[in-house]
View 1: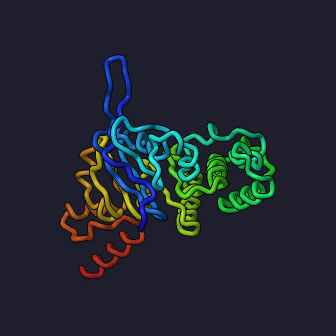
View 2: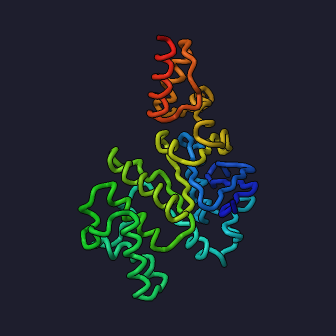
View 3: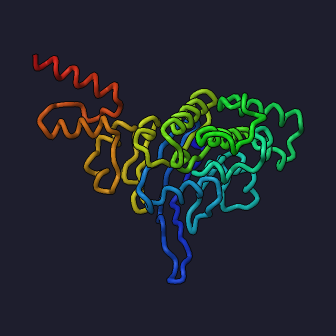
Length: 282
């Protein structure tokens, strides 16, 4: 698959009164078109800094971030890069700017001067994609948290990006809202081939991705398919991260002498493995 984003030997520093503080040094990672990657890490690991580097909100102190052949350091490409890589943040209320859902989704398109008929098409398709079309005449502020976040995502989809970076989009939502947003994310990736980069601290969300990248102290600690990454239970716990509950159960059972597959990450896989183990003992 082709790369849509490539971070190449990136160093990023914050300026403080005491001097510059490096959040990441000589950091490199690639993201392929149409992929779904979850990025994990405890607070201060650099994951949110990475999210803002990927569409040019942050600029590398050293190194380069290349988006579809364009360098984020080159201001001439700033608008084009933001059209390719959309951002969704943690608090949907901070992204809602209008009193009607329909107008909110159209806001970015109006700023770009998109022709009215084309704008209408894009807004309708975006709302349908997140299953919020029936709410197009509603007030965003009367919606649930999950619905608000889906409207925020629709506003990004209307811009027709090739990639969406979501920085902990479910952190402020209840379980139902989190489920709504995750179903939307998966649908966009699978049906529209939009590249998804999800920054999250929920292990069950990361388990739904095609790839998991674990960050620690501005570096990549683990990178691979979810089953392989989450099998490293002790390493993840050593940097303050949990694993999906089925993986945790399997880990504890293995310590108790029950031989189970360490790559189990879902409830169904866990039930199947435990059923098989119980049948073997009969």
